[in-house]
Length: 211
Image (cartoon, rainbow, N blue to C red; front, side, top):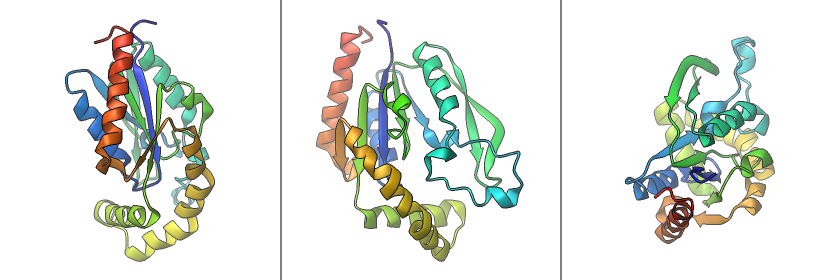
């Protein structure tokens, strides 16, 4: 397929700097069409469960994600078809009725903690990236985000990190590093790695006669 979009997977632990890396890639391709698909949008719908049960959702486990829908949407975008991306309501702990219309682009960045965990997703990627950041930096970033954006207490963030986030990271996220084509230490601060990666993307685009 001559005009197949370039698909980039960007994985890494919570607070690793995945979003910063994704934005850095985006800025390198302001002259081309590019879109970002966040795995967080594809948490499973839990509207069939009472709110009390939803509160116990482990969002750091692979089973929390609706990868079947994500795969369907990626296939559509690769085939140059638009999709309706779901929106997750973190207050109600289930999928919102709202959707986001997404048009196909030349470059697709799939970003999330576990985008490299599912082989079906990996097989769709041209470039697989793992953002590798020290645990102490990641927990500080997560704490600041959850307190500021989600109104949580320091105690609740630490408890969740110790009981859920860290064990899930060690069991499911960290092992996916072995699938990465590029490992970026310290996330968006590593400009050399980002430049090398974007150069590779441009090379693929040229080979496919998109540019």
